[in-house]
Length: 474
Ligand code: F0G
Image 1 (tube, helix red, strand yellow):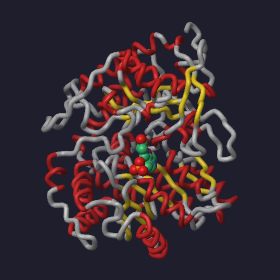
Image 2 (cartoon, helix red, strand yellow; image 1 turned 90 degrees about the vertical axis):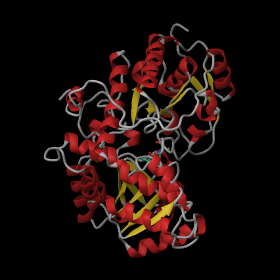
Image 3 (cartoon, helix red, strand yellow; image 1 turned 30 degrees about the horizontal axis):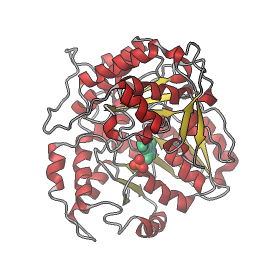
Image 4 (cartoon, helix red, strand yellow; image 1 turned 135 degrees about the horizontal axis):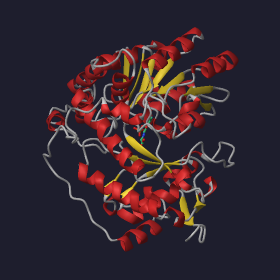
């Protein structure tokens, strides 16, 4: 089926994508000149994470914590009760989480990586192996920090940007089975990330989750979900998976959860929090060990690293995240950007994912070898051209190996992540125009060299310099 085919079914009889909300309070955007942007990015060491946000016009760096909260979330914040222990806000949070993810233990954290840190501190360690469809960068870093090995087992289709497949985030269950046969004793937990962020925001099918669950359980190994974008994943299941059409989103989410023994969560994504996360599981002993660490690093188990008002905002956000009208708009509007960019001749990961459009910088910039970071080159150009901030997901993010060597990443992508309910259709039309302009002069873009980098998660703080004369016509 063509990617069009997937999206056409989502359309109502009207062509216009209508945002299912109107604006209640506005934030100013700051316009800059191209000269100011060139200066700013050079001072930032050509790393978009180093830019002051006020010098960014459209911020597509991440969809994490950057969404607009609803009127009802702001109202819920007023109910925030800051009691240290047993706050009513905690009980509202707990009930909203368990409504969708009925795990016995829910452990609140200040964000997703705090949940990862706690879980892998307990389960990781030298000699251990953690499989996942594709580890997100913080997940991989938290696994490797303990001395364990992070193995990515996404299906082969998930590694080919242009290939169309409805569930490119699926984990390769045959490869998982083989790994567990060989190294089962060293695997304390297996993960599936929904949607598969680092693999292009691609969904995982219910059938694949069930299969992964049965493989894991046959080997006596727990399966956890990294569930940041669970609602978008559920929407794709409803739209694309046989027998799931028209089903209640919350029901699909509960079925996804029923395949797993626990989860990590960043509430900064689908739950519409500006901050927050949790760790959940059924295993009592594991929960106890995790709670003990939580108290050391995050806080008492009824607030974790969060204020009562944050717990309230998330509890309300979880209700809004599974609204089909919102999800229809969310997925359709992301696809709109992807289709427009692809129509302008820029290769993109197909089909378009849930929270972001991924430009294939390696294909667009064949004159820049992966070790000169084509993704970085494209992100810098989008900023200089139109003030758009994106993020490289490629050799900068994944090229540095635990032994200190450097290899090309599996792909060199640039992610345009769409904050939830934040930008309008005309903002997105502007983004399309900027991408078109950059694509027209793709051959002139230079490659980059790293001049400074930390030992881990280098993409956040590395500094770069353009390699002069490396553009074919530049
Ligand atoms: N897992 C996935 C799949 C993620 O996308 C993220 C964060 C995390 C875990 C960690 O959560 O940020 O709350 O600590 N992703 C953001 C992004 C940062 O831009 O994709 P966190």
